[in-house]
Length: 125
Image 1 (tube, helix red, strand yellow):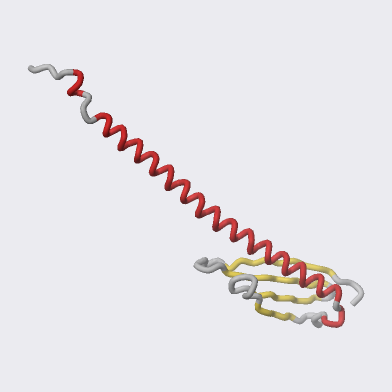
Image 2 (cartoon, rainbow, N blue to C red; image 1 turned 180 degrees about the horizontal axis):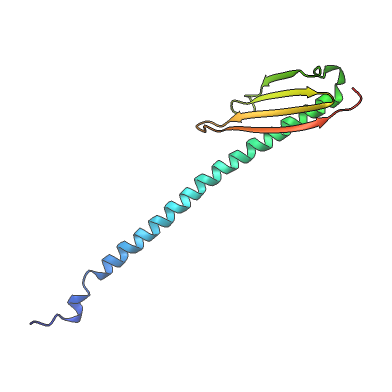
């Protein structure tokens, strides 16, 4: 039986090691790209929630400063805010001295309808 030399038994191992290293590196890069895409989505979610909160607080301020324009008890008013939030709508409802402001929006290519709601009590009206 012929003996293989040490050199001939190691041929091809370097290329296999290089291919495995490239595979591991590629999986790592794909993971980073996936995390970055998820980060961009979460950042836009956060921006829309912040915008909805700001709009609701503006509406509460407008209700406090314009008591003549308050909706009647039991009434609901709805308006579009699509210029600020994608497919956005603003709803104000009144029950006694409690006003509920609800903002809904739906991001493009997202089947979930997001919702932000806050309640304010305005006495003496």
